[in-house]
Image (cartoon, rainbow, N blue to C red):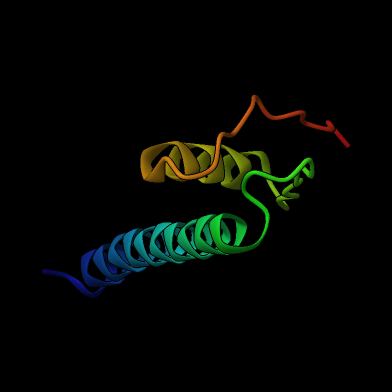
Length: 81
């Protein structure tokens, strides 16, 4: 491989690693949220709200919360700003 090809390959793997680590972190946070809600608020009259910095992150939170199944997540309201 040429140096340019090696550099390009490293960039591609770096992006994939960042995406995977990001998704793992979001899943872990979704799990913690679910456990905290179950232990402290489930069955009460209170509701919660989760704010995410980007649309992609909000979608991942919804996906993971739905997979975990402890917390009922409604559709997200996205502010286009």
